[in-house]
Length: 189
Ligand SMILES: CC(C)(COP(=O)(O)OP(=O)(O)OC[C@H]1O[C@@H](n2cnc3c(N)ncnc32)[C@H](O)[C@@H]1OP(=O)(O)O)[C@@H](O)C(=O)NCCC(=O)NCCS
Image (tube, rainbow, N blue to C red; front, top):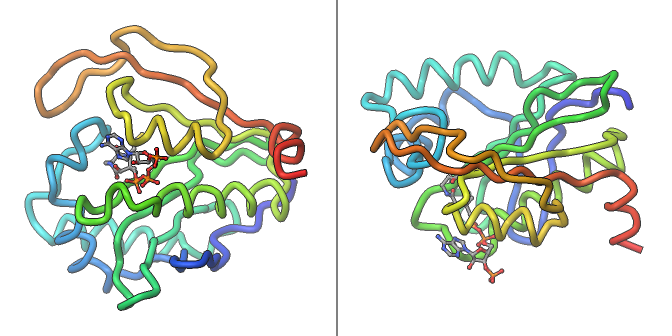
């Protein structure tokens, strides 16, 4: 594997591109300030657009680095920024990375994240040469469970009461899933 970074990717309905600081207005309005989106995430909703702007400034600066895999998800129709997807902790020796994603509520349940993740996995396995991609989510996060399952990430276990949500303080089970290079190539044949 050799790092290739955040290359522009395209699907039927989506464009996956690098982040720009000027995305702050849409990102803040569409999901980064929404507690329903962050319910099972490790971060809390942004209370001020300046928080979003500072974050995106960092993401823009990192966007050209070969080991950074962080895409803004843009709906081609209308050129609307609807979410983000990333391969985090991408390690060249382990040839491994962890998927993370979120999207504005207005676009849930239309197959967009399945479409985005399928393309990111294609890029990771076919172009970059990852050996393994994993993901985790709160057991009750049915949407995330379905997205990973549909994209071929196999169930690998559950960490009981592993995560405490920042919104309610409730402890929830975390499900682990993963896909290997060999699984990917077996399934697309
Ligand atoms: C999880 C999330 C990314 C799913 O994105 P999405 O674009 O709505 O997912 P898709 O439309 O591709 O859905 C795939 C399947 O899950 C189903 N699904 C999506 N959200 C669902 C929900 N809340 N409840 C039940 N099913 C759901 C879809 O109907 C679809 O089912 P199907 O294959 O039977 O038709 C989105 O809900 C989200 O951003 N949530 C908040 C952030 C988050 O939880 N991120 C993941 C952290 S691990």
